[in-house]
Length: 369
Image (cartoon, rainbow, N blue to C red; front, side, top):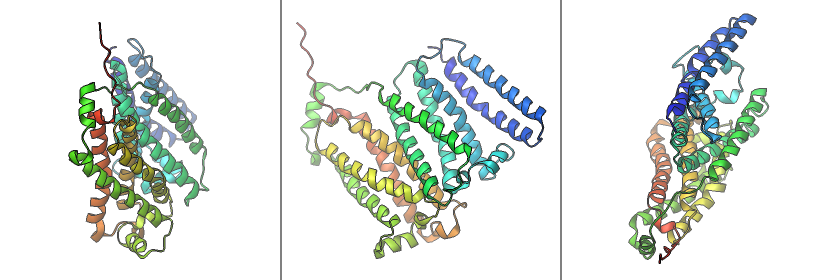
């Protein structure tokens, strides 16, 4: 298939920049002619972009069109984040004034940056793979984990936090985006796996015990420590009366007590889902033939990367009240622990996906007569 479709999606995503500026400028003119002109201009730009995308043979995979729309929205989210931090001005000023107040929190800031940078890159990679007929299951599963963590924390945080009573029609539109994305998640899971390894290499790897696999041994040690860490932070947000929990909250992560409830929901999700994941992954690293390990690490590494990026950024962001920000003297320890907690799962995911022989079940080759 020609690459023109993928190039058209990239051009379409960049069209969000003039469209946002045009709408924002014309909305403040407060006239029917301005709204009509903005609508016609938007339709014209989108029609030209769609014509460019479909100039050659249109992709068959429906996710191509879903991700094409999401690239457009990702650039819009990046514009929102930049304007919230006063880096640019005049693109989405009206939206920021009328939107749900959740978007103006530190957590909302970091979500905008994550969508506008990481998700945008992921969408372009998946669109490129679809365009060239390649498999995009691996990068798709990484996006599934990232999206699910973002969506669950955002929705539950909105419901139980201090902005729970501020629900506008835009929130219903966001739920439509969630519904389509959940369908895309199931569609991504249904993609066939492309992993393969030769029978002799599988047998050779499976004979090695954990002590003869030093890298896996290091991962096992990390998983034990990560399990303890995620359970500890879960107890902290549950108002554990232990002196250690109180000292940790005051000295290292006061953001866990932020009334927006996003960090509390995120830590509870980590304890309830990441905790069991660490135990299951321990089993998968010690017992050969667990074919689900590469997929599970892909989903979890995407979820943890999104969660830690948002948590670290929001803990230090100026939108967070000063009393809930990480104290200056504790920032080196805070960054070291949280960055390691986010980076090591990425290394584990790379190990499981690049060398999956230990996790595959041996399938002897059929003898040919």
